Image 1 (cartoon, helix red, strand yellow):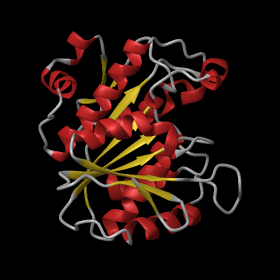
Image 2: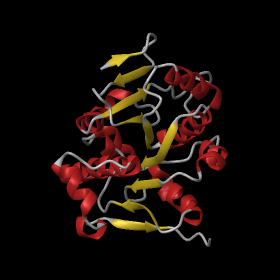
Image 3: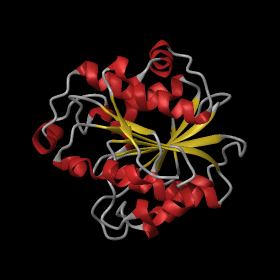
Image 4: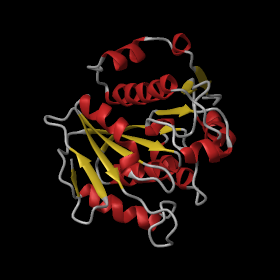
Length: 247
């Protein structure tokens, strides 16, 4: 693991990387909170780039395109293999920030293959809506917790439904907004009502990894990822989210 010179980007470089993941934390969170997911992705041979995004400062807020543009400049300057395929995984508000950054990276020639949302939400500045014309062609997979005030009662899934065909995600029964962080934190119990067991949190991580690998066109090299990738969602207790767009 390494960091950029100013500490704003954490980089886990996989030897002979099979792909790259831009992994974006949520509002007031940090790259360190996503270590469990990072470890799983690295075990699959993926290089993981975790930006450290501000929350409240007007200059660095993760909902501001001008602040995200600075991070995109730094990511583009990391010097990764230009042949790598990329996906974005965004947790909570990181879904909006990650979508906007994906659009910018596409414009710079990055081979972006998809967007994975971990109980994602749109930003107050409508970053997803603003970037949608540049990313609408990408696969999107939304791994949702039960509706709560922290995911705005499932609002992003409702926004995506008329814009997607077929299955575009799953709802994890009993899941919590903070499951992607690999354990239950008091803040999520208090703010979001999370009560998910460890087994559910592990399933969320498995599904996120399997979704990213599928978008990259890669087979999983771990038993858990392979099982998720080969099993129907219903067999895993997950509820598919169905799009309703008319072609």
